[in-house]
Amino acid sequence: MADVSVRPSQEAVERELERVAFDSAGLICGIAQQYDTGEVLMVAWLSREALKETLLTGQVCYYSRSRQSLWRKGETSGQMQRLVEARLDCDGDAVLLLVDQTGVACHTGRRSCFYRRFAKDGLETISDPVIEPALLYGSPQ
Amino acid sequence: MADVSVRPSQEAVERELERVAFDSAGLICGIAQQYDTGEVLMVAWLSREALKETLLTGQVCYYSRSRQSLWRKGETSGQMQRLVEARLDCDGDAVLLLVDQTGVACHTGRRSCFYRRFAKDGLETISDPVIEPALLYGSPQ
Image (cartoon, rainbow over all chains, first blue to last red; front, side):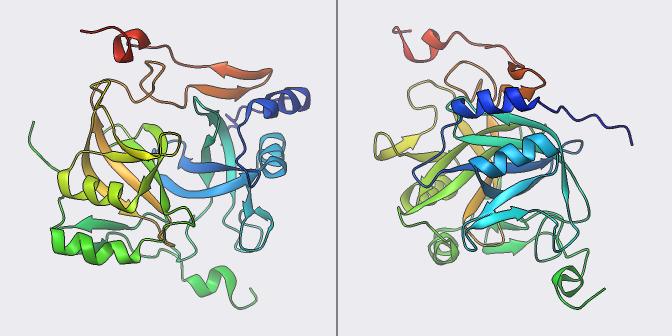
């Protein structure tokens, strides 16, 4: 597949990171959207370092609030996100990551983390796992 | 237009709100996506009360962190968001709002708040206002 991604220069990244409004914990909200289908895959957080790495390498890297460390998406599971384009919102505190998702985004083995909808009688599951979660994290390959 | 929205019952809303993981400030991250085109419009926050009102009325209501009050989207500007479907993510701390946006979502008069992309030489504006911002908030009609 042709690489259609937009990759900013290191100088541009350094400069533009000054316009990002990281919150009091030093984080910005990231939304991953499959670039060609428009499916919203997940929401996670990025530190300044995570956003910089994402923009420079073209591989999405979040910040794990629970582990308090960089979270290179797919490093363990193999389910990586290649960055096609990153967009900043009007007040600079959210970033939309247009990505090409390998496999699935969700740790449950589903394509998207948003697999439950508020239906008439309560939350309803609308998609099934396409990969067995144990295969993502469990036993050795 | 036919109303294709999914509206949960009051009893279901009360019950399922217990499964929502509001953060230490009592908020959950909300992503508004135009239901038919897939365009991500904006990111904002919802309190328990805001989410409840959104689910029950079918009109999106956020919580304004700056004003510390409910923010009924479009109340001032007229640019309302009709809820078509709400989806909860796997860990319950983000909600995807599939909406039908009247006019524009962004206070700059643009359809989406994500109108700047990280391009090679830095942030680049990729869409123009379709409504004059002064007409959204300024002078009387």
